[in-house]
Image 1: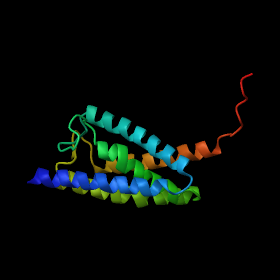
Image 2: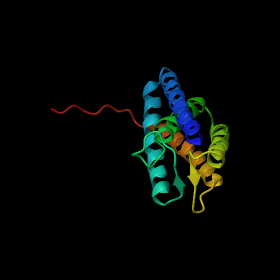
Image 3: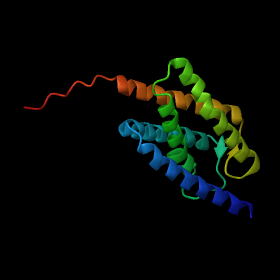
Image 4: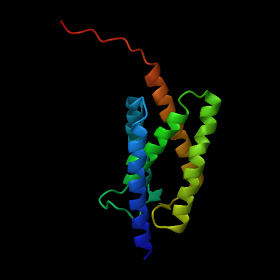
Length: 163
């Protein structure tokens, strides 16, 4: 019975993530949002795979059994939330960027804590705890925001054509 609830929770999160993805891509500049989405998915996968390999985090219940990471979180939910974070911080100063980081990382940490304590969707092991997750989430939000700021600030000089 419990595993059924957890699988349904994962299905709900998958549908929610897909709806959120479609909604966020419609807001310009779509190229920036897709770049952040892909960058965040890449970073999340590396971090999650490292934590799973080092036996710090485990995902006992999964929709896709042949992955040892949380595919829905790493490839969809976390990147989508990160795009929303980048959208609301697009014109913010450094102080507000940091403050708004917590608008996203605190609720995500609370939700992850609930899932870790009350379900088999995620389990912390070998010293990993909710504070590590909070810090990791907050830092990856800031890294993604720094990444897109650097991309936007890059020189857009045209590349000369080959002759």
